[in-house]
Image 1 (spheres, rainbow, N blue to C red):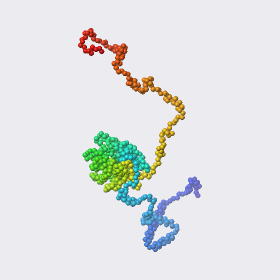
Image 2 (tube, rainbow, N blue to C red):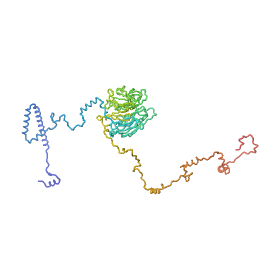
Image 3 (tube, helix red, strand yellow):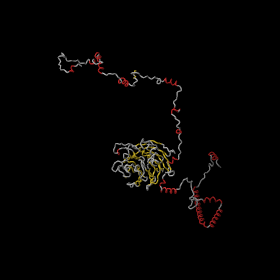
Image 4 (cartoon, rainbow, N blue to C red):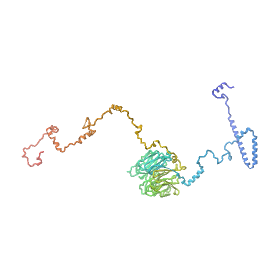
Amino acid sequence: MDNPEDSNVASTMGFSGFGKKARTFDLEAMFEQTRRTAVERSRKTFESREKEEEESKQKTSPTCHTAASGSGLRRERQKPESSDSDDSSDNELIGPPAPGSGSHAPDDEMIGPPLPPGYKDSDEDDEEDDGDDDNPIKRIPDSHEITLQHGTKTVSALGLDPSGARLVTGGYDYDVRFWDFAGMDASLQAFRSHQPCECHQIKSLQYSITGDVILVVAGNSQAKVLDRDGFPVMECVKGDQYIVDMANTKGHTAMLNGGCWHPKIKEEFLTCSNDGTVRTWDVSNEKKHKSIFKPRSAQGKRVIPTCATYSRDGKLIAAGCQDGTIQIWDRNMSVHTKFHCRQAHAPGTDTSCVTFSYGGNVIATRGGDDTLKTWDMRNFKKPVHAATGLPNFFPMTDCCFSPDDKLLITGISVKKGEGNGKLFFFDLVDFKKTYEISVTDASVVRCLWHPKLNQIMVGTGNGLAKVYYDPVKSQRGAKLCVVKTNRKARQAETLTQDYIITPHALPMFREPRQRSTRKQLEKDRLDPMKSHKPEPPVAGPGRGGRVGTHGGTLSSFIVKNIALDKTDDSNPREAILRHAKDAADNPYWVAPAYSTTQPEAVFAEVDSEEDEPDNEPEWKKRKI
């Protein structure tokens, strides 16, 4: 019998079976039973596979197949009903299906969720890529475009950060505008505009490799570095223009022509100037340049570098000079050039651009002699290809390579009213013009093909910045802002011009009006400062320590009474003799002062005037 105490505890604790003996398990016996069951099932599975193979062999004879199937049915009927569950479990396969079995899905059956719309198989993509590789023109993203209104003057500088999120434009109107593709809507308005270099034209704009700062090169001699929002970070120092050797100055002494960031070192950038030098700088040290490179002509004279850039690996510095030469230095050796081409372009023309291909072996130069040339670094004596008849009116007309290094693009300049500015695409293999884009009715100055976005930015001579893109081939960038609708205008901006509201007309700006002036007058009467009667102006020379109205100081009073005294003493002799009688009758001022110290007068005694000789001069006979 159950213990009553255990039943009480069970009812108290809330569960049954309290005090019963725990059930024990023999693990070894369980493992042995499991092993036997697995072996038996494997044996039966093997037998069933052998039967299936025999049946497949006997398919050629339908009678044998029917007999076999009939015997199989008879065997199944003879089995007891209790063994149905065991047979069904034995027939199940353990592990992956046998090779050659029909259990797997056919090839054309889809497994998993349905494919998204527009999905293409990898084989199809490979075939399309092969077609695009054969024809690089299909890779040009020019099916769509947007226009950013920078201003009315030439857009002379373009810069796009490495991620492609922000675009910065600069122009001849001294303005630098910042455009955020993710923050813009379809109105395409810049979120910031200011003049970092005052009244100097912007020559070059470029983001650093990290995209956190911007290099601004203008028409002055001091380059600036701004952050992403346009606030100044550093400004290069200006050199001493009275020093002959430019290596001894700390900075540039003449107008800048260009500049760019180092492709590997985020703190280093270079600038070139009309003082005949190319200088490298460090953002953390604005007091002095890092190194200096001085281009020289064949006679050893100074030449002006009109453009300069780094190679893709940052080991070389190339500069296009005003005498038509292209000079390349090792970044660590600033004395002698590593590569030199004397007659790259016509002397006296400004080489507006020099750039390296993504592979690093090809250099493209845009000359002021209306040419576009490519050079091989392994054979730098003569150009590989050259294109002529490309007008260039601007000292910053540039060229750039496509991301796959198969095309070279540049813009041409046109005079006002003489056609449209175009963007030309040249094939690097045979250097034929394979494609062109008519941009606008003004010159095409700047062009930029961003490799990550696969979009082309163009700056024109009439203040426009255009962005060409393809909805399928391009990524982000202009695609982010064109799909957004215009924001609703704020209520303050919707006020019509019919209402003219002055600040003091609004109730909140009005001064409180006194309801009764009598109380205010009584308060003012009790105030000694407000109730004090001001003293009237002093008439005459002044009294009581106060001077007259003609001046507030003593000096002005003295000037009034002395300097402006008009007493007429025209005859000074008469003025002196007028006081002679008073001085003789009352000798108070002069004679009494010397009465005690005055010596006695001793005169020569003369007997008579007749005894005096008559030969004295006439002036001695006169009495004074």
